[in-house]
Image (cartoon, rainbow, N blue to C red; front, side, top):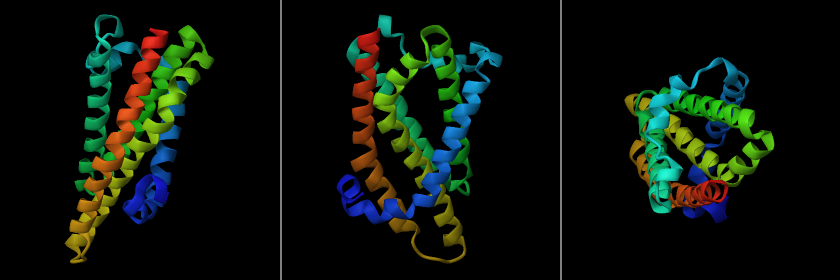
Length: 189
């Protein structure tokens, strides 16, 4: 923990229970998305899918930029949406998991489950925990705001620590995940 998060290790360690809840929600909703994959038409997710460039029509840099931008913006939204009593990050992480499950089902139907694992795991082991940590930080932010309303201290320190972790740890992890994901798309393209 200290190696990965350095001076922010205690801050991240304190998020453990919320992170565990976020991972559970993501995993559960991924399984739900996968199990309901044949019941949901692609048109339901057209708005989400339309924001991503077609790999056949995009340069490697455009593809990398789109993936990175999408993940950084989503992660930041997961974090800051916690100002609403910490609830939206949990909803967002559940929706994100459901979408991943649905995509996995759709890809497995065409290319097999082995292909899904081979393409999802290399970048997913970095990206999913990073994004889920942002959701946990968002829930923690909501908790800190509630404590502030109860006249407790700690909100300002929490915001500073959250932004520090986001900028110095989450964004570099998302860059690495986007590089791996782009490489996989190019390789399997």
